[in-house]
Length: 353
Image 1 (spheres, helix red, strand yellow):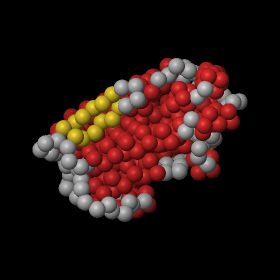
Image 2 (spheres, one colour; image 1 turned 180 degrees about the vertical axis):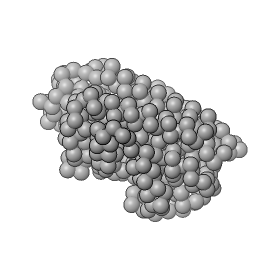
Image 3 (cartoon, helix red, strand yellow; image 1 turned 60 degrees about the vertical axis):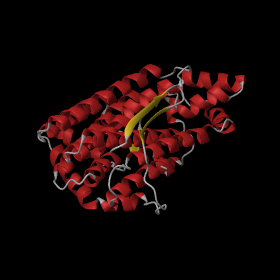
Image 4 (tube, helix red, strand yellow; image 1 turned 30 degrees about the vertical axis):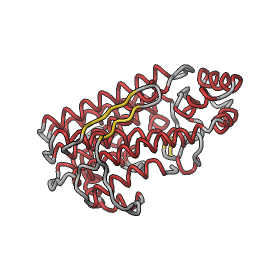
């Protein structure tokens, strides 16, 4: 890590956390696909799934039913995968990373349950949401159960730094949810406000997932910060592409309808950029669409997004965060797991679902 440092740039159109210093050099290697990445951690992922099933168990039947439904509903398990790969890349040889990967997944799942209630969502990953099937109150309460169970599990690790990283991340996620709610239906939402929301709501849990690999491996704080930079940048890139896909993806692949964010009055970066670069009439249409929510003007909104090349701009921004994530891994020795983390960052911006 000698000669390295953390560099943070923030502003209305920029917020990149990256490592300043020499990046890894050498010829480009073929990029692994997601299947190859997960195959590298297959044994650990199976152990995580078994651990999750065991720790979901409750003598309250509704908790078992609802929690198993949401945890078993699919998803890429990216956050647990980051914990597993980061730990192995840092040289960890124990088994605590299995526990912590499950903790991160529980925290993420709890946020999904609460998100769907707040947003009034009826479908996720191509299936009915828990709140659509069981109602809002059970969904919120089972989300609370997952939060509290995750804290029981992290206490069992008996490491204060682990608890500090996860507690801070969980609090940041909650702050991000509240900020997003405040900015809903606000046609004046800026890029800076948008990035503040997604850093807290999405990226901070990715950051924690990567940090944990360094913490349990007893690496230096400088190395922990490097892993944290990787996770934060990965999370931001991932969310940027999520917001691109909301206006461009095949609903059959994503399990969501086009324009779901617009329907909820969320001004994500594609909409913000289009608003700021459209002509006056089109910009006024976008502002009304944000204020009112719904999808009545979705075709006109998508037309303006296309005309202003907003999706290309957002993809370009996502690529810069991907590059920063990959650069953050430079201090660590070459390994299949480090290569997989690099590939995961590239997958985050190349995916179509």
